[in-house]
Length: 73
Length: 114
Image 1 (tube, chains in turn green, yellow):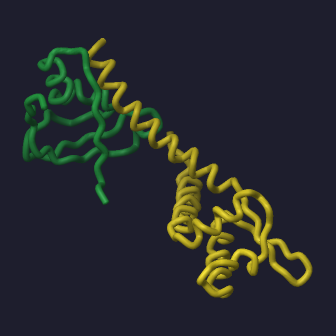
Image 2 (cartoon, helix red, strand yellow; image 1 turned 90 degrees about the vertical axis):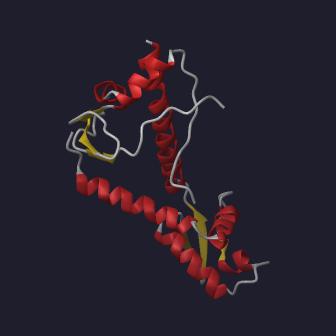
Image 3 (cartoon, one colour; image 1 turned 135 degrees about the vertical axis):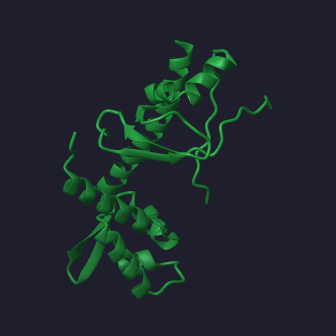
C-alpha cells in the first residue's frame, strides 16, 4: 500500500514563476504555511515550523532529496 | 492554539478503534446486515454464515466495543442494534482530511496565479 498522494493541477503561470514558488524557501513557506530556517539545499535537512493556523506548534523537518523539473508528458 | 492534547489523544484512540473494528470482512458484513436499523439476534445474524454462533458473537463484541452496535436484551436473547454515530464521525473525519488535501493545492495555485 502506497504512502503517497499524487495530485495534478493546471497553473496559469510561467514555469519560472512556479519554479520559484517551489524552490525559494520563503515563497514555498508562504503558500505551504511553514516557516523555514534556511534555503532548500539538495541533500540537506530543511527545518522550521508550520504556520498553518492551529498547528503552529508542529515542527517541520524534511530532507531535500533533489530539486528538478521534468519535461512535459 | 494549544489544543487539549489529552482530549485529542482520546479522540484518536476512539477513531482508531472504530477503524480497527471495520477492518474485517465478517464485521463489515454484520454492519451491512444491521445498518437498516432493525435489531437482530445472534441466531439471525449467524444464518447463512459458515461461521459459528460463537465466532459471530466475538465479532459482535468487537463492534460493540467500538460503539458501532449495542446489545439489547429481549427476554433471554441478546439483540444487536446498529449505532450510526461512530461511522458518521469517521465520515466527517475522512471528509476533513480530503478537504485539507484539496486546499493544499488551491493555495499554490492562487499564489502563483495571483
